[in-house]
Picture 1 (cartoon, rainbow, N blue to C red):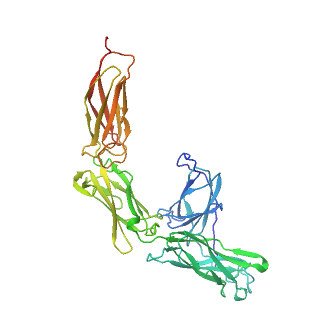
Picture 2 (cartoon, helix red, strand yellow):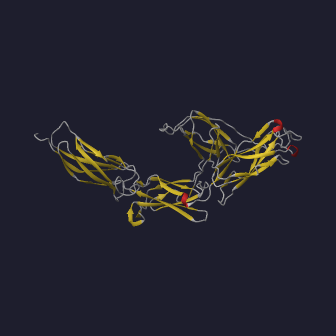
Picture 3 (spheres, rainbow, N blue to C red):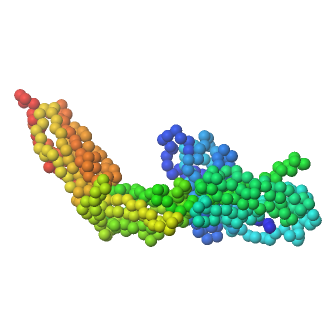
Length: 488
């Protein structure tokens, strides 16, 4: 059967998504997207391989949005990298990029795959070569049962048959008189015990040789190749490498995790704020589960994107947004296994999936919905500075419910002219779930540094808390006197 292969090469300029790496690492990431050339729809599970240079060997799959990513590709100098994209029923495409050390590459335009056009086989009609075949000259993939299989003990398909066709120099299938042994081998794979059986097959009357790949316990891409040795003419014939993907098994509780971008976000006072949550799902062998594995989400506060169902990508990831809104949460607080009363603003987000025993497994994470305005207190609230003297203070900053303010909240303290302020005076809050030192409790000191004036002065210390939305809360109830120098 004739196969039409469209090969195009595009020199793609680099879109630099980030500045040069600040480390000495020359590794880069390569991002791209693959779509249907006719309708522009994304294509998932496209096998994407780096085929050149030979020093780089990497394979991945496109996800449901057609996105693919190669991470941490090592290059020492500006390098032309060839990427091959293939999927059953589509023509194989090739993209060539120029990459430089430390600079990530984003393909500006999606790669478009074109459906194959089966033009009919070489059956000896017009343009065909008739007569008996000669010796083997080429070997090509004829058929593969499944381009994706599963790891063992997954309940899915764990092997696939593949057939190679051997042809003579005129493209005719070998007959029995010219039959040869075809040797199959794994060029690269995840190394989980996968293998090929049988490894050597004699071609049949149609010049075909069929073998079988079986999976192991590790997911990844397996590259297989067929080889024929013809020592009588000092010739070795190799097929083009063929990629077969081994997917992971069922979700496993010990390899199931959930995390929030921000464990505290400004969601109590504002509707529509988004906070990303990511679930990672692996099987009992530490592989990512099969792409498309269902994960369900629920939340006790606001709503969560994909509350019906999300699906894992090729790395076992599902990312959704927690969106602020009603109901505002009031979940029980648990510390060291002890449950306390309801705490305004504390929510619980739960992800659920199904394991190999058809049982639900769950993982949860707490997220604080904090208010935009703050409550600020300080101690002491008065001071009396001797010349060149100083004073120390403690202060607390919480939201209106007593929770830490949202991640990204800024606190600034001003002491006025001639006053130096040190300590927690110009800070940005991180992801704090619970009150405490560095989350809601802080300290600072002041010191008289005015060398030009010996006059007494009334002073006010101002604490400004700015939420991520820009809403400010100002506290100016710390006041005191700077005494004049004795004798003046």
